[in-house]
Image (cartoon, rainbow, N blue to C red):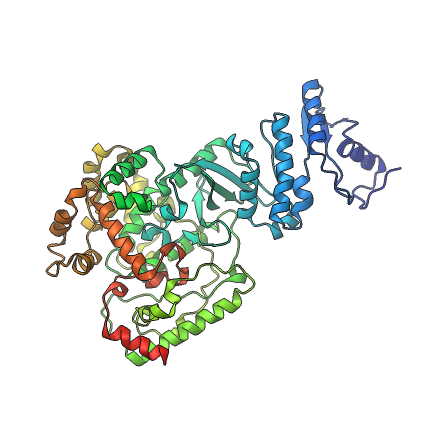
Length: 581
């Protein structure tokens, strides 16, 4: 007599055949197509949960070696039976049992899947980390790990001294959309952002580090081809500068700069494509950092409007935290706010932080930014909050608008420059962006020749000449793009460089006209890696002022400005005195 808890099928013969095949591993049946299939599993409907992974794998091995079947389908449900409870340790034990069965029976690949109910307890990143840790042998062989809604996890080897947090949180581009650095003290911190498949589709990804490998969870897909896997891996490798050329350059720089070697500094974060680096370098010019962040986010929002959100995109509006939305700046000098206004602003910011803490009490509390600590509140009070004189009512929850991938030349070339300027607040930059996109699509700008200069330093001089000929690209923008391409001998100097030389090196007479000569003299001993030495100093000064930037609350990214780096004496003391009262 056969008994089932659910009526899966009205036809009892079908139920019996399924029972025999799935539970007993017997009565292999023939599909209508003539494909002979062997199916084997154990029941998950009884409390004893036998965990017979080894026995099932033996049956599957015998079926494979018999040569009788066109397909052998095996279900090892160990992880599934305990995965529903959301206990990572228990699920890891189940997965380890599957791992032993797979390795002992010499299976080449397998598919680990999670049901929709498991997904509620185990996040994509947790599930991918669990699987790649407990099933390392298969992961090394290139197996894929997924669930019903789609999650493919890739494992990429990294150097022994690699640190994901240091590689990501090393340059300001990591704060710009669509990048999202998720810092956590309890689990692995990760980088979230959309990447592109070879056909141009955008997919959401989560990148985290475990052991000596980098794990890339590609969301929204069930299976990816070898070409798609290589394409995703290449984008991640470019972002984190994992190429052999970059590794050799970093090793040579460390030989000149022992402190940078000790701190693990050298891999400066960049974008997955050269085009994104070019546009973001343009967004740095002639505006404050808060507006740069706003423009980058607006471009990604526009991409989602035009093409839809990336595959695997999840609406996070339900747990959206308050975010300071920066109004469009006017690029004009603004009067400093009064001490009374600054005091009021700081008080309301602290109240906002308390509200955020209450809303996230049910979630994991990640590292708070030092900007929220009492001794650094003066920096917030003197900062250009919301464009200086804007009311704090603009510190509202961010719009629940999907942030797509960074737009490609093909997605921008047909847009009207005036529309782009108004929609994304780009100002004069919109015309340069649209023209660049059109020139790339028409072959006027050879993006491939520029990309070749990344791996061949001998081509970088010609690349610089080509960049300077692009509409809207001046010396600073071109130098910053070359830095992203691996050319560290040229320092993109701007007003922040002038401030740094005055404040740190005592060059009180340094001006915009003389700054290029000054940096050439100061950092000449580190040639041809002058920029890395300069940026090591500048980034260290930022972290001395703001704390570890990898732990900074993303809501505070717009305060990461040169203005807040200037020395304060009287104002700071007065601000602290008022706050303490």
